[in-house]
Image 1 (cartoon, one colour):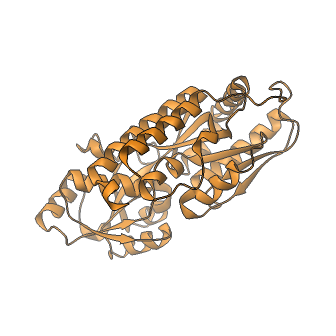
Image 2 (tube, one colour):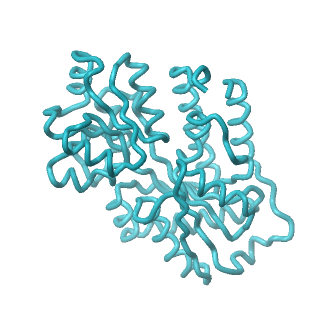
Length: 325
């Protein structure tokens, strides 16, 4: 996809996010009238899945209707998004990391869905993204890791799983003129196993993915890519604090409808979501899964997505992705 076409594509996305046209014949005051479904394009027990189920439980009490979660993992989130967007059902919502759709156009030739069908409801959390190394590497900071990489270009290996983190880390290596061997994985658990055994040296992934190995002393977190430090690992700096702001990436997670849901209904749902995650007990359970509660309005979610798309577009240009597609 040429850069001009990418920009037009992203402009259409943002306009649709900001100015969705209401469905006719649907009343915000009467919604929900039946069971509400959250489609999650990730497998069970992921941080997003846990949060979706917490929200579903609490929102069902507020709404007086059942709220169920349906996991539709596969193909970098495409399976879930395609299933969701093909339905156009105002009682089926999408709960997903934004990276499931913001990074996809840069990583694949064809996009099998039209994102003009998507409308923001609420920003919910930011997944904590960690830059990790095996403890056996004897590296204690990003600065030390960079020194290792510069001293022996092409020697060390990084785990790659197609998606937003892959794009961010690839862009960082390119901009920093660092050479590493990319090792592709289909599943994060395999990458974590190889990292813990020292068969690869760097993995940038959701913190929750590596927490057990961190507790076991086999993996070390050098920094979080998020803007803020996290209470679950309070001594770990952000990449900006460590001196590498080019690695900054917030794992934005939000709730979406198909385009046309009335603005007043999306605002009301967002208000309910904010009320749920404001509960200290709910926030604590979310934090335990490696996320930061970051609730926001439909407009704030749309703004965060636009910011992420702008950053990804800059990374794509640095990687000259157009010539590779």
